[in-house]
Amino acid sequence: MGADLESITEATSGAIGSLLSTTLLYPLDTCKTRYQAEARAHGQQKYRNLSDVFWEAISTGQVVSLYQGLGTKNLQSFVSQFVYFYGYSYFKRLYTEKSGSKSIGTSANLIIAAAAGACTAIVTQPLDTASSRMQTSAFGKSKGLWKTLTEGTWGDAFDGLGISLLLTSNPSIQYTVFDQLKRRLLKEKQDEAGKGASPVALSAFTAFVLGAVSKSIATFLTYPAIRCKVMIQAADPNEDETENARPRARKTLPGVAHAIFQREGILGFFKGLQAQILKTVLSSALLLMIKEKLTRTTWVLILAIRRYLLLTRGRLKSA
Image (cartoon, rainbow, N blue to C red; front, side):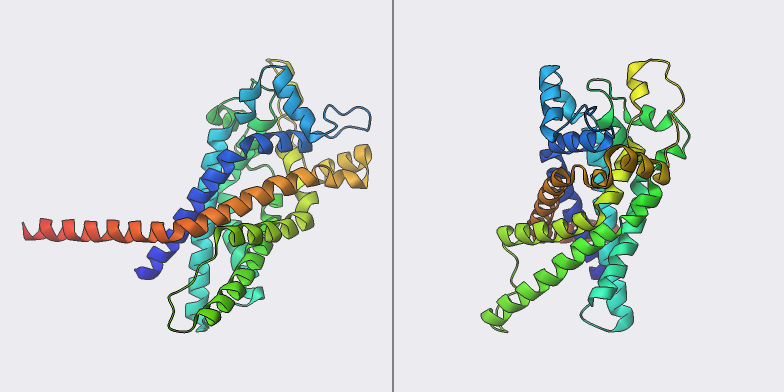
């Protein structure tokens, strides 16, 4: 039971951290997504810089629209991080029990993180697709979650699933780097404190730095796939121009990759890389920093709730 509680604690603290970091950085995420979704020849771009998206929202009086789709994004972030951290913690515990080893190597960590990421991608893909379409819709014309998901077939709701599964390598790299660096730092601190000392924890600043470094590495390696995924999931511009828009054309990875290369060249696959790194590094660093601080509190709360339920059950039986 204790091991299950540990998995739930990790999942809950990770989900809450994701919720807070997503809300704080959502305007930046909207600007980034709209900038990435545009693929036009040089000289014909609507957005030449990331800031152009922000100034468009201001000039049209649609600053609030920078938050369109926030509810869906928060739901997707909360569910995905809960599933991921629970799966990661569960698979890691299962591995240590089966192997009899107290530590996990880099290769095993990558496999465990990829398995947790694959489960997360499948469960949350419809929410991911919906949030991307909401963010890339014309300012002020974003539709609700249910209407966005039911416009096409249920297969459309899973647009980009193949790339999402491929991108499970992103959190695999990130959390593996973070865990390895964290374990080394904590071991050094514990050795300095002595064997009899109480367990040490990462400071908020150290967790932030480790999160930023690990996410930067993962983002750079997987960015071309990230750009293609955004374009596949983006709202069709025709949907914003006419009320009776034609059925949404199905986008494919080869088609999107060809469009990027034809219109923007090889460097087009890295368009918006700086914005992606800025957003994801800040988001992931904040997530891990908040998670590290919430884990102990969440553990105490869950134990308190469990004890209360056991006492209540005992009183009911004795009554």
